[in-house]
Amino acid sequence: MKNHLMKIRLEAVTDAEQAAAAACVRREVFGAEWAAELGSTSPDDLSRAHHLIARVLPEEKVIATVTLLDTTGNETMHEKYGLAFGRFDRVARYTHMAVVKPYHGLKLPLYMLLEAHRLYVVPGGFAYTWFTFPSNRAASSTFCRLFDFSAIPRVLEGEQGPCRVLLRREGTADARNADMKVRCFLDAVQPQRLRVIPALERTTPFESALDSPECSTNTWRAYSGLVQEDEWMAQ
Image 1 (cartoon, rainbow, N blue to C red):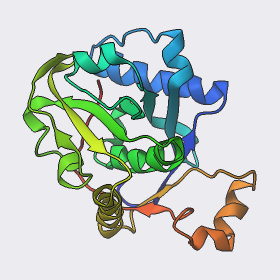
Image 2 (tube, helix red, strand yellow):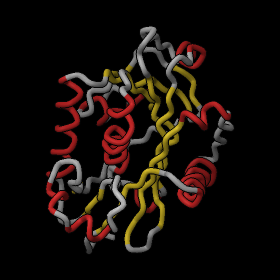
Image 3 (cartoon, rainbow, N blue to C red):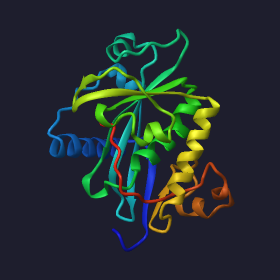
């Protein structure tokens, strides 16, 4: 994995095969690696959830996943985590971020957040995004340092131990600048060793789409970079 170019494709989950692969990754990470049980998802949450996966090429193996859950109007959940929003604010939670062990250290959570933001947060008009993170590393995490998330002071007991909520106001100049900063950070770190390919929203065959002139635009641009530090937001 260290001596050749690695290609990882990000995909929006739109069919049963992708959904099953995402569930398999969650079971492997939370069950086998963390010995933790994930709570069952309610039917209402299923209809409000958007899933993203990362697939290593050419093996086509799914190695990571994240869920963006629309929590708009869920006052019970927001109160549980000490959150309060305006009446008309759309709110989404990142959850169930999981990366299988052989692919730790690739900063896949950062790539996947950028892609989930592009595919779901911006089109959905969300005003806030949030997730929980281990309390002892929350304020110093890459998400706060680069992504413009703020760590809420209150410490909560999460599924994997003490945690704090990381919260970001979307659609602001600070948020847009933070996204650019993260892209630059990822592109600047050893781009020759890893290529992360954003999800394609068109029906153009994958390889021909990559060769098209449109791939030179920001919408189609593949991310590059490899670093050693892992970030987790597994709850």
